[in-house]
Length: 238
Ligand code: C5P
Image (tube, rainbow, N blue to C red; front, side):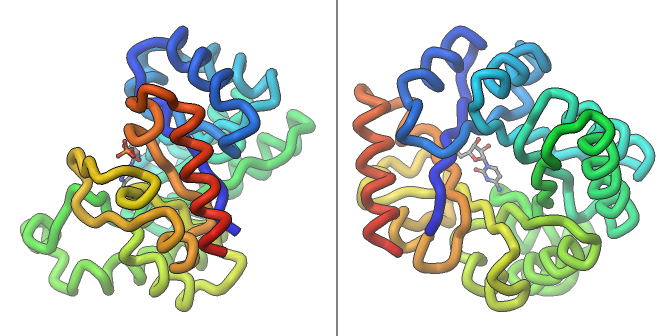
């Protein structure tokens, strides 16, 4: 069964804490991205994790292995439940990330966060990939990066809903697939800037482990009601 994560894409720590409290018990975790983290820093993450909220720290590290390992170690110290890196950083970088997560959490006596990889950003298309020298079709590239992440010992990937079924069949039942781009049905008809979308039940049926939903919840007049409707639809999709 898929779990629901809310993207706290808001302008202040105050608003993020307010939303986390409103959505308590309905969502399975919150996602903090680079904007909110840059504004509020690790103190906000710590505050949420200290309260028992599961935080997906979506900072998409992409650097040399040593630097990524150090960044992942710092992320572990915030109590984050899930962290991520770019698969295109390569297998040695992903291995360094996995090792740092295991070693730092063992040293701090905490549970190890899930370490997942971003495959291809949903804002990229085949032309953008080709301009960067990637000749194979986008879909094949995504699946190949997911296999690389698995080979490097990561726990899963972030991918668009359209790629979920192919990754699930390539990487097996235990690999976590985190899926943004959720729109339609209970997630509303407003697509915003998401192109490759799928409804909540459909995404769960395709094999998504976690659905990341932002604006359909945080911009709703009743965020808790909106999250409840999406969670109900996800259950119906099992
Ligand atoms: O508001 P919305 O539901 O579109 O939010 C989706 C969240 O998932 C945003 O935080 C966005 O940055 C993130 N995301 C995405 N596509 C990716 C990776 C992350 O939409 N490939």
